[in-house]
Length: 144
Image (cartoon, rainbow, N blue to C red; front, side, top):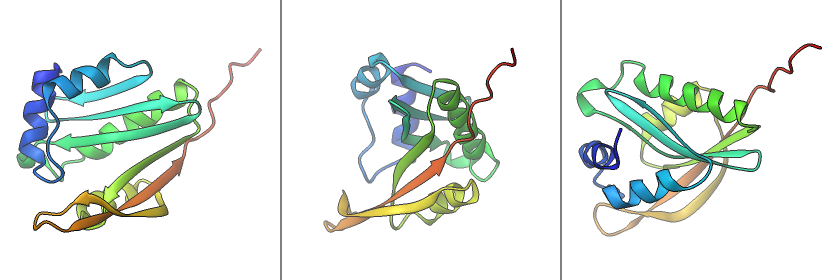
């Protein structure tokens, strides 16, 4: 997907926090150790820092939700992160985003912390971000 396609889908999926622009996606995609997992109906953008992988955003077209696409994108990201040397994935999810929390918890992610007031709220307040973590399966070493 191009930065413009990513931004267009992100706009369809998010109002708060604000959707990212094509320029922001282009900058992220140009950064080293950025991973983009995509399907026609959605994408996941993440990055690696040492052995830690971070999910930056996950977007699935509204009309295609609850079909396993988000789950597939997360599993693809985990596999690619593990192959690149990652041992753990973390992310932030808005405290009021129960659908995303259910997705991640169903995939084995567990709460590791809370960032109060992390996201802007729709009515001017602030929403906490829950920090979730998941250990990746160790990479299998080739047999000698």
